Structure formats: structure tokens, C-alpha cells
Image 1: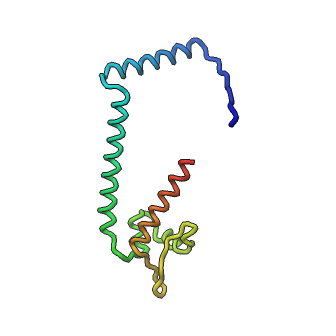
Image 2: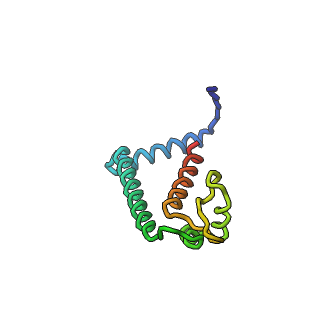
Image 3: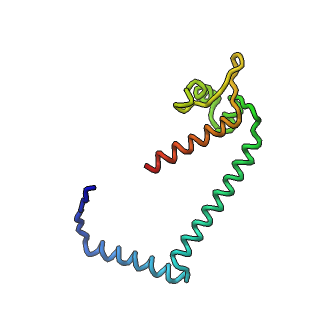
Amino acid sequence: MKEIIIKVQFSEEMIQSINELVTNVIENVENTGVNISEKLIASKQKEEQYLKEYENKEENHNDELQEILTAQDMADYLKISRRRVYELYQLNPEYGGIPNFSIGNSHRVVKEDFLNWIKEKKQENLKKYSE
């Protein structure tokens, strides 16, 4: 790994502004009577609580879905057009398409396959942003 060193020259005014900012932050933290680690723990607990509430809400919403879904069911659930769902039917699931089966000219999706497809999409996004 190469190390890059960048030298930056700050004016006296900039250094003074930075020092004032740091001093204000330190004073604000000291004035609250709560140390930073306690604030971080409280923040993490709030985040975990929010995630649990979201998961519960999502599970309840998933229970409302029927076992076999139509394009309109999925379009309503995802808040996208039915046409877009039909486009996703045409894609191979390996390339992001929704796994489906057809009965004559009608396409249907098993609820579990649909929910797994959504989870896979979420994981793809997490990988994209974590790289």
C-alpha cells in the first residue's frame, strides 16, 4: 500500500476557526454531563430498536400477501408499474429477474420466491455500498 502525504497550508484564521470549533464541541460534550461513549451506546440502541420495528412492520405487511402473486400484486407491493413487473419476468433470475411460472398466458409468483428475490436485491445493494 502506498502512502500519500498531502501538505496543506492553513491561514491563521482557518486554524483559529478549527480550534474554536473543536473547543465548542468539547465544551458541549462536557456540559451535557454525558460522555461520548454513552451517547454512542444510546444511538446504537435507538438504531437497533428502529430495525426491529421495521422488521416487525415488514413481516406483518408480508403476511397480507397471498401465497400466489400476480403482477398487479407485486406492482402494488413494490409501488412500481405492472409493466415493469412483466419486464422483470422476462429476465433470468440470475440476472435480477423475478422467478415465476406461467399458466397459459398468465404469470404467477410464489410468495416465498418473491420475498427471497427482495432479500437478494437488498443484499446486492449492501454489497455495492460496502465496497
